[in-house]
Length: 388
Figure 1 (cartoon, rainbow, N blue to C red):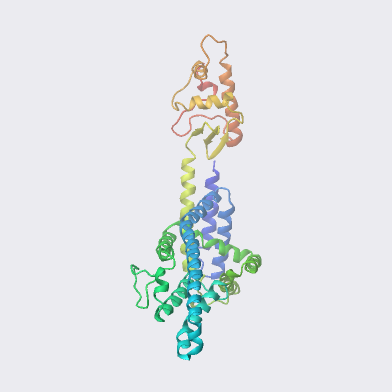
Figure 2 (cartoon, rainbow, N blue to C red; figure 1 turned 60 degrees about the horizontal axis):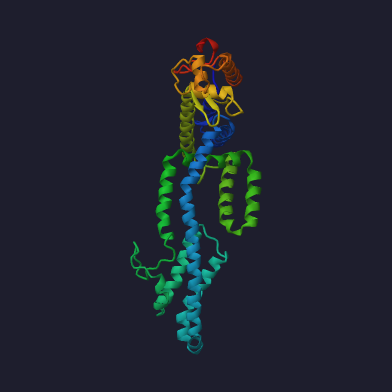
């Protein structure tokens, strides 16, 4: 009889084959969207997708923490640089007023400071806010140095930097300077790990099946958080590209994001992973294991709760049988293992009834009448396998 993993394999194989070699872009992405929806929702494949998403989150965690810390360090440096620049400008105010030549000397500092303030207050949009903030800080620092105020910015000087700049070597965030290395590590993993490929597919599903809902949701987020404006602009470009593909108006040489070649590769990597996991789970499903703490039997790809009550007879019987999975236990041996002595008047029928209860529970969950001789193991619960 075909099990659920085999049925799942057939379903995803059929869906995968239906789109993977299509040449029409819209047909390809529509098929990919349906495949993505299926593996997200199907009981047998959903746990594998959740695993991929957890793996991606864990891999990105260090980078995101560093990103957050770098922003805090750069913001602190910007506040300090503002104090330094304001003090310099205040001290030199009389000279600036009295001499146009000196005023021209300090105008670049004032302009650089204004740009730094605009960056901090969100008045300038950037695809890379950390890079922009670091660059603006450097611009202020180099202009202060050029105007003869090198001593005031000594705390940011770092002549041990990997790359030297003739205009000045400054560190405004130690973490930021390590961030690119971490980003490279993450990108390399994305290129080889299944989660890196999977990450691209849910966007296709949303833009194919629910573009209006996705647009409205992101628009609402941008309204609450203005710093997301650059992400919104990127999304508009990506969503517009998919809309052109939908209408058949997208020429191959104008595609920027949704290149069929790239997404075919993503789909192949994800499909290979899911297929392997289904086959592995199917193989592992033939194994027989019992979790004594949870009172759960793992059998035929099922997790079967043997007893809701701890230390019930079925629970104790399973514990005894799994002490030696290849032994055929006599009923009196089972009772002895349960702590009963030979002189106690305990019927061996107690053991039989416990075995009968287990077979009934297993039959309900797996449609198998008797639970015995699974894989290479012989765990005997049926009466004719329990010696009396």
